[in-house]
Image (cartoon, rainbow, N blue to C red):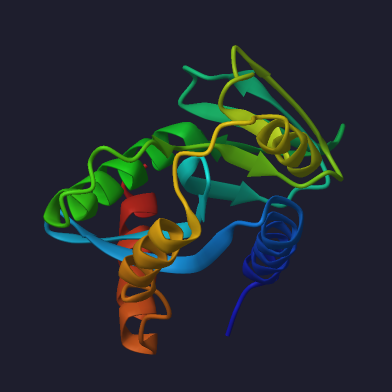
Length: 190
C-alpha cells in the first residue's frame, strides 16, 4: 500500500510526464530501475527529446523549498510550524546520471548529451542558491526547453534510445519491495 507522500509523488510525475510529452514533444519513461554497483537505483523519469536525454528527479511540493546546490539537505516549509529536511535531489540525480552513463556505454551512446534537472511542480516556490542551471519549476523547464533551437537527436534516435530505457521500466512488485527495503535500511543509518 502506498503512503500519501508516494501517491502525491506519483501524481506529480504523471503531471510532469504529460507536460513534457505534450508541450516539448519528448518521449518519457517513468520508474526506471537500473543496476548500479551492487544494487539497483530507481529513476523517477527519463525524457528523451531533440536536445538529448534528461534524467529527471521530480518533486511535487506545495511548499517553499530553500537551500544551496551544495547543501546535503534542503528545507521544505509547508508553514511556519511544519517543515522538514529534503535530501538534496541534485546529489541523488548525480548517482542516477552515472547509472545512465553506464547503460549508455554498453550501447556506445556516450556522445549523447545527458542532463540531470530537478523539476518541481508549479504549486510551491523554489529558491535554491546557484541552482538556475539545474533546478526548474515545470513551466520554467518547458519554456527553457522550447526556447532552445538546437536539434541533436531526430525521431529515429529518440525511438531507439527510448527502447533501451523501456526495458528497465515497470519493474516487478518484488523489485520495488526490495528497493524500498534498501531505502528504509539506508534511512535507519542516519
